[in-house]
Every structure is written in structure tokens, then in C-alpha cells.
Length: 150
Image (cartoon, rainbow, N blue to C red; front, top):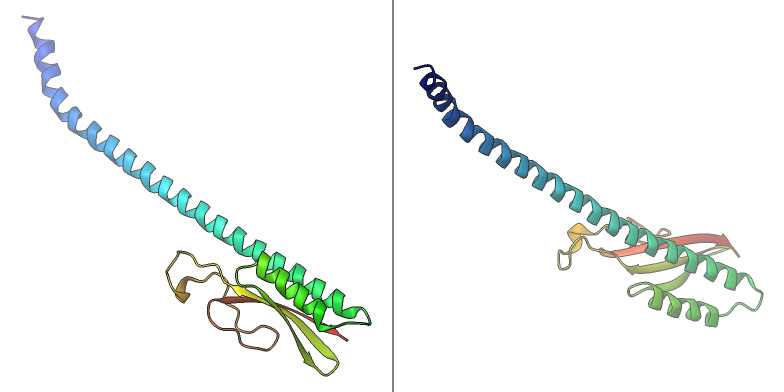
């Protein structure tokens, strides 16, 4: 009679524990999945920002080169055209231009902005400058302006 008592007690507790461990496993898997998706989204955001920063850095380098090229006394439109062509190669639809206002000039480089998702429209553009050297730029376009004295 002593042997049957532990078996009945054990059978009473087994069904109650079996369901709760399955729920705990499902919650753990769901938590890991949500955490993994959050990490992936963070990595994608960092990659987009790094790409946008690289484009801004290239545009600043081109604007500085335009200023240096125009500082040489026989400055001409050929130097500006050369750097505008280089901007078109380095940046998506890039273009270098010069805006003069008396003794102050601004070397301006514009390019198509990086979108969060292809085909998402102008709502999700990372770089949205309000103006570029005092000139409004269209939506979906990024700009770097470098002012200098002639």
C-alpha cells in the first residue's frame, strides 16, 4: 500500500505543470523574435545613416574642391564643369554649382537624397534641408553649401 501512494501524488501534479512550460517556451520564443527584429531594424537604420553621411562627406569634399579651383587666378567655368561632372559620378544625380552675391560666393553641391525604402515617396527622405545657401531645394534633394569670399 505504501508503494501506490507516491504514484497517485505524482500523477496529480504532472498535468498542471505540462501546460505552463509550453506557454513559457512560446513567450520566450516570441520575446527573442521581437528582440531580433528590433536589432535588425536598428542595423538597417545605421546602414542608411552611414550611406547618407558618406554622401554628405563626398559633397563637402567636392564643394571644397570647387572653392580651391576657383581660388586660382585664372578661374574659369571649366573647373566648375569638371567638378560638376565628378559630382555626377560620385553622387546620385549630383551637380556642383556656384552662386555669387557680390564679394561672397557659395559652392553648392546637390544630389538625390537617400530614401528609407525604394518607392516610399518624399515622406521618408533622410536628408531634408530647408535651404542650401539661402536657396530652397526641392523635396527629395540633399545639398551642401560652402560660402567663401572671392
